[in-house]
Length: 426
Image (tube, rainbow, N blue to C red; front, top):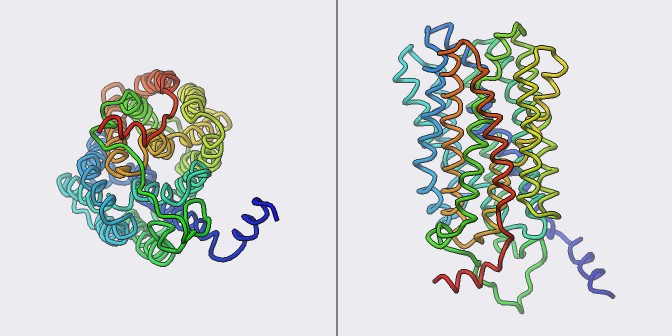
């Protein structure tokens, strides 16, 4: 029997493919996670809050900026916690806590201060349920197919783009925006939490397996996870190129996403049509993440990222210069495709460039840069509207920044042996 035949026979035995159960659980967690329940639905609630309380778009959008800036402050702490106690425990504490806080938005009393406090609280409590946790777990389970595994997981965000806006719109139209926030919290509490509890384990070793779903060989000692420390990573050119590339693109894409519904309403589209365009972003994001993950396993990841960002430039320009439904719909799908190379690609490249030993700490800092862009982009986009009566200035700036990001990705160096680099720098 050949080696490959032996491997096939062995892998066919349960529970050799348990790692794919991990993927299923992380897909659900990404579908009904903080990024979709809070960020993606934000623009649907913006007109309702503006109408009920008389707040300006920039005042309301500042709450999303606060949400993301609190995440930026908390992620380095959570990175250390996840490296110490694992992602599963962190998620099981975080999910019910932030779900209850999200429900609290349904009891807003007209105070902007209360709005800001609640968004900050949701951010602080949700930090253990973010992509940091999911990608950390998947990186321990997969190596050869890590890009595809992460892509499949983060495709859950694409599903969330499609499902949560529809859910929120139905709730808003049927029961009002207050009950819609309560409903979103219930999705996390009664779907995401039990899936993580029953299906997720931090490492394959807990299930008697090794990386990529292979059975553990008792004759082989378990090797310590290789990788750089945060200090070592921060001294590399790769670290700072990743940080700058993703902060610029995040600023543009998240800024546009947060304002897409009011932008389309201003052009005369109905709320249903505007919601459909937002859903189209998810329709592009779902396959985009899987395709990006598949390609990153087979080609140099920075080249894949650069190509996807170049594609998003076309999408933004189309969205900025069209009012017809067909081009708007297609541009939203293109933008969704480009989102396949955002923070999931950042997580993939963090593991490849710096290893898994201190992955939580390093990725949390890289993700902070991404989130700084996500925090400032929506506020700048709303502010540009408040001052000019149009989103055109913000969208043109976003086009330039995404183009720069595409070029910067091409400057990233090749991967190197992590173990040797760690020893040389210690």
